[in-house]
Amino acid sequence: MKIISPYGHCEYAFEHDKFGYYIHIYNLFIYKKHRGKGKARELLQKTINEITASGWTEEIQIVADPNDPTVNK
Image (spheres, rainbow, N blue to C red):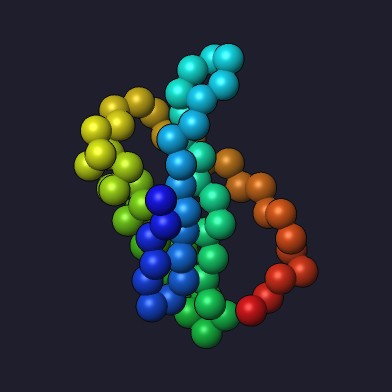
């Protein structure tokens, strides 16, 4: 699933492995002109709200794992 806003985007997926199902939140991106204004937190909260509205009741753990720190769009 992808959430798009005027200041960036965030994607998530319901996935599973040998331990069970989990939520994978990835590609949280905020355009440079909107950074430092709390927009990442706002978009992440919107993503979490959508996940829980879908019926997910398990814990959501967030782990930062930048895949390309040189990207600065």
